Length: 352
Image 1 (cartoon, rainbow, N blue to C red):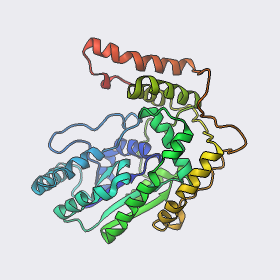
Image 2: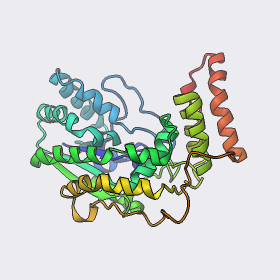
Image 3: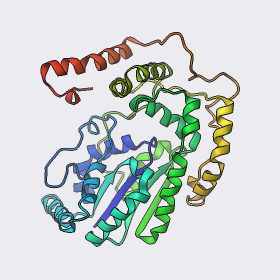
């Protein structure tokens, strides 16, 4: 039995791929003998239903993380796999593999690796299949900026964010750790920016799936979109006023209004120059670990008009314009927790 780990990284279509995997969990077992575990070992707990609805999720990585935490009890790790395989026997004679997906593993693979190797020894696995999607740093930094404003309480400007961006160094550490593991890890890498329209064929090819089968499509083709310019301004204001509590507004905006066009962010020339100079060496080292077709570029994306216009996400604005649908998201996100508290229900269970 093989072990497949989609390790990210962030802002490369992970939420869409996780939504597709969740929607096709049963078909993966029937058609390919692949198990996409949806609950914690021995608890029968359902996976986060947001992936099934086509909303942002963290995939099923929490299941695998729980297994790794059982490192001191190899028998429990073996027993969980035996139970999972036994349950799958009702559908297929012998499962071919286990599939897990969590974009956060790329940022900390070096720390993650010892526990993974211990599990491989416990399960007597000679090799693990890894899938990594990469993205050019400047474009990735802009997309992550929207994410940290949307969900993590960030209130700074885009220029501030570019100065603090450190993901490329983390990616290098993870690639070094994977390379040091030798043949026990089989890494497949693709460049998100150059293969954005081929994410599903990439996943299916990695899992050796038949693309002609009637696979189910997620409810939404765009999952976890980036914010519009006005939404960014709104979220930065809310983050500065109420902190992490504003994240519910961002979640409502992207889940309920998936068709809104993301802002084309324009940092200052000074910020871009400093960003490129600082990341030149890390990018060169990362590219030594990547296949030619997936190597990173520090060039400014074609949609980013540096120097031809002032930054669009600066510090000063005197108005924030919202559509009626966006305003409804704002009101519902800020008001529903109070309604939920008053009724005694769980606010996290509210739809949308």
